[in-house]
Amino acid sequence: MTSKITATVSEDMMSVNVVIESNCPMVRSMSPIEGVNPYEAIGTPFTESEVYKKAAQCLKHTACPVPCGIVKAIEAESGMGLKRPVSITFEE
Image (cartoon, rainbow, N blue to C red):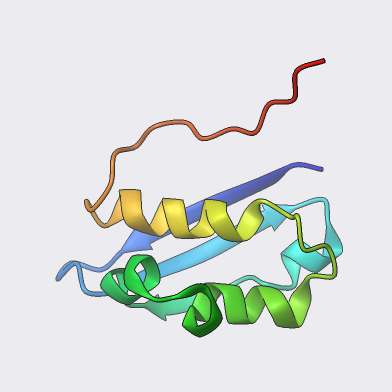
């Protein structure tokens, strides 16, 4: 599965809108996520996170990395984190 997350921060840097493109219908159903406060997105416990609550409603696969990618995109786009690649790699 492939997903593309596009995060756009507001001019005042106080909210982020997220659009998700994916070949997974469950991931697509998470989009859009609008008006996310970036401070809350990265500082809220998982059980209180707006992103993870939406993931719980839309996704059936707990190991899906997309919610983490969404939070990382919000963090990077709002200037609160480095824009660095994130990956999960399995070694044999």
